[in-house]
Amino acid sequence: MKTALIVGASGLIGLQLTQKILNYATYSVVKVLVRKPLDFQHPKLEQIIIDFNNFDKSLVVADDIFCCLGTTMKQAGSKEAFYKVDFTYPLEIAKAALQNRAKQYLIVTAMGADEKSVFYYNRVKGEIEKALSDLHFPALIIFRPSLLLGERTESRSGEGFATILMKTFDFLIPDKYKPIKGETVANAMLDLAQKGIKGKEILVSEKMQAFAS
Image (cartoon, rainbow, N blue to C red):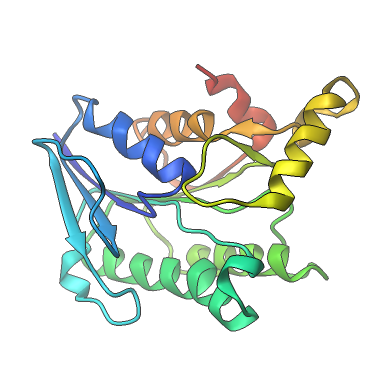
C-alpha cells in the first residue's frame, strides 16, 4: 500500500485526482496540502492546512507526490505572484518530498512549456520542468495538457471563450492542440503513477486523450 500527497487539490485537475485516488485501492492514505479545508471528508483523507510561503517540510511525506498547482496572471495579480504559485511552491514541495524520500513526483505544467519561450507563462512552466529535472527524482512525470475543460471553482472568462471557439472548430484542430478534460488528465496521472517509471517522462496532451473516460 502506498501514500499519496496532492498539492492543488481544490483545482480542476487536483479535485478530480483527489476523488479518484481516494477510491483507488493502491493508496491507504491520501494527504492534501491546502490553504483551507476541502468541503468533503473520507476515511483515507488527511487534510494538512499550510501556508505555502512558510511550511513545515517534514509534512511533505508520501510515496507519490502529485502537483496540480497553477494559476493565471489575472488571478495572481502580478508576475511575482504568478511565479510563486507556478514555480516556487512546486519546487519547494519537490525539494521537501525528495528529502523525505518520496519515490516519484508528478506535475501538471502546460503545452508549450519551454524555459526559452518569449511568452512568460510558457517560460515559467519550462523553468519549473528544468528545475525539477535537476533534482534527479527517482521518477519525474510531467503532464503538458492543452486547454483544459471542466467545471472550475473560479471563473476564467478568457478560457471560457477559447473553449467555445475550439469546440466549434474542433474538426479543424490538430489532435495535439485539442482541449482536454481535467478528468482525463487526472486519469493519466493516476495511471502513470502505477507504472513503475524510472527517470523522467513527459506526457503531452495528445497522448493523455487515451485516458478519457
